[in-house]
Each structure stands twice: as structure tokens, then as C-alpha cells.
Length: 286
Image (cartoon, rainbow, N blue to C red; front, side, top):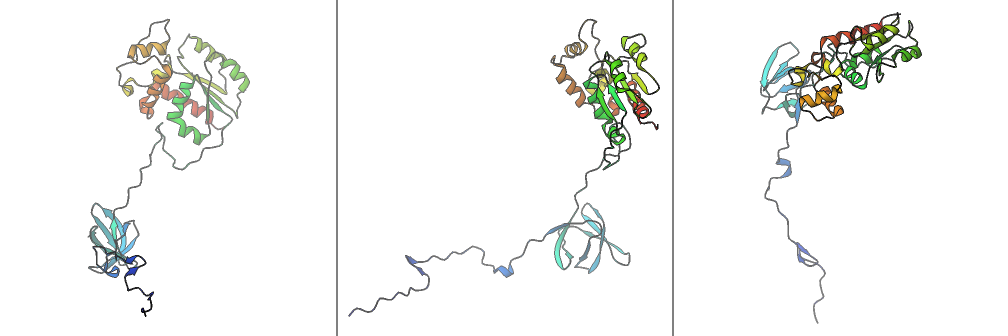
């Protein structure tokens, strides 16, 4: 008789034969393996212990490569940051220098003191009108923060010829003052005559002497010596582009000019004073 067939397999064998055990080069037992030490920013007030000396205190300063601790008696000790370990609530950590917080601007682009986190005020009934879209974009870039805090809305006219009808429809009053900024406001000009016809106790029209608001940007901010003179009869903006060797695309030229304006320092005083005057006028108490 044949011996009975055994279904018991020797240890280490699988259904298809011996199983191969997998080994890793690291034979260190898991309980002996060192765990990575977490990094903790040395923020002011963080309480840690330096195990070598037993000194325990709160972080009061962190300079390049060192941390200063203050214990409960007011004593200070300075320790190197790395690679020394500190004890935080009983566990070992490595202190690292905190990331610097981004600096907040102390002033707005107009030079006013910045008010971080200030919400825009509900819009006033008063308004400031400027002559064109480029004027509006320039005023927004430099005075936008101030205008939102004051609740002043800026709109543009698409030219000064319609100003009388705009003023009539707006109907300025003590609780709704109207300020208007006009290009090329020089005595005897068409713009001057229109401004004189609509100025009143509650409507103020001011202007700068430049042919276009482009000229109110300082040439030095654009890297040019001066704004070119354009012969009469030519479109001024196109003539400027041609004289400066720019592509004759006035929209693209304006975006280039606007991009070089970072603050009031890039604008001529003749424009700065007039815009500030208008803001003061429309925000004056009733």
C-alpha cells in the first residue's frame, strides 16, 4: 500500500513551491529607528526647555542662528538654533527662525497714511468726474485707496463738451457736491469757457495745463528726457507714439505709461494738487 498523501506543507512553502522571504538592507528593529525631529518656528511666547542645561523659558527673540529664552524669574539665556534639540511639552523639536511676515505698506500710492483692513465707505452722493478713461484709470491707481475710504466715486465724461448737460442732470447741492478734472485748462481755451459756465458753490471745475493726462506723468518715470512736441493738426497721442518710436497703438502705449506709475512721486505737481483739491471739496462737511 502507498502511504497516505499529506496536505501539510513545510513552513516557507506556498502552493507552487517554496516562498521567498523579502528582506531589506536595514535590519534595525523598528523600535530602535530614530524618528525625524519636527521643526517648530521659534515664535515669541513659545515655552521650551534646553535639555543640556535644564533652562526653561519663553522665546523672546530669534536672530540669525540663535534664540533667546526668558525664564519665569526674568533671566535671559541665548542658545544656538540648530542642530540643538529643545523639549516642547516633553518631545524633542528643532527650533527654526519664523518666516518673516510680509511688510504692509505704511502709505498709500497717494502718500496718505495707509489704514490696513479698512473697508470701503458707502458711496457718497458727491462725485468726481474726469475727462476720459485714461484720467480715471490714473486717478484710481494713485488715489484709489483714499477714494474708497472716503466713499468717493470717480466717473469719466468722454470729453468736456458734454459737461454742461452732465452738471445740469447731476444737480449739485450741499449734500451732493460735484468735482470735475479737465485736461488743458488754460485761460481763454474752450475748456476754460466751459468750466466757467458750470462752476458754482457746489460744483468745482479744476484742471491741469497738459494737452492730455499722459503728460502729467513725469518723463523720468518713463525713461525719456521729455514729452515730445507734436505739430498742430496731428493727433497728439499718435504723434507722441511716432516721435518716441513706439508702435502707433495708443491703447497699448497708455498701458505702458500707466504701468510705470507707482505712486504720486511719478506725477507732476500740477495734477497732484488739483486731484487733492477735488477730493477735499467733495468730502467737505455739509
